[in-house]
Image (tube, rainbow, N blue to C red; front, side):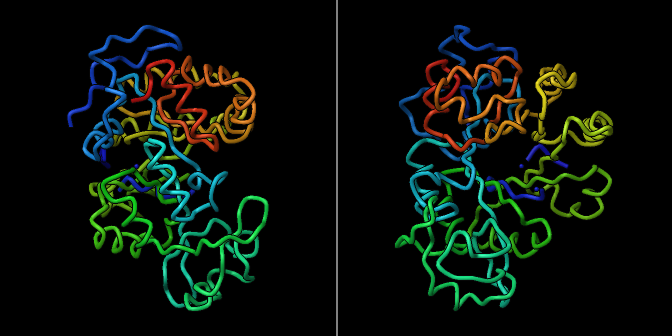
Length: 319
């Protein structure tokens, strides 16, 4: 499939990294030799971001910002993406939908009611109409920000930050055209909650071109089988694991999964994703994130990117 990262999502990422010398077993607070830690003062190049993504054996944790920096700009806005770039976030997660007339735009919901000054389903309105609207902030106030196209977003991200394209699986052919046009194919990550055989059949033509990451809910009865199928057939760049309880036994396999070449992504967004070790607890006590490090998780999608980056830097776990 590839070591190049779909429910069903696209995480736009679609070299010399200092990260390659450290093993996956680093625990929170462990001293890290200087030779294995990225220079924090140096900006990351796209080559080093990609090299870090492909290296599951080092100690550097990839920070993924959920819908951009939505606490300080409207979600899925260009400003929310730019804030992430300025902050030193490794990857931004954005949501893609198609309008009635075929324009690809950034929008999480299937309607525009919550996040814009308009109403209606994205699939039932035109791009011309969307251009007349303003984006709302997190508490529902109108802002000067406009709905971006996918092309605008990828041009902003080009060479600066990895991208996870969410909600794009069914329209990936069109997304890929935009990725080629903007020369961002190698920055994009796609995720999907589907077994390997289905991915190969539906998405096979892209598996050697973009990063694909399966999503696995650990309390599903087939979880271990799905993981093993991917590891045996074509090791993905990473797995996204949903961890509803922190007592699930598969958590103990995270270290060996990384040793086999796949990184481990767990969301810190809400308690149901991480057994209760979530961003809002971390906002009160950043050591909440210790659980992720102690369990060999090296990719974290967060709604609190600044808090997470500061925590990781204090542990020498982020450049």
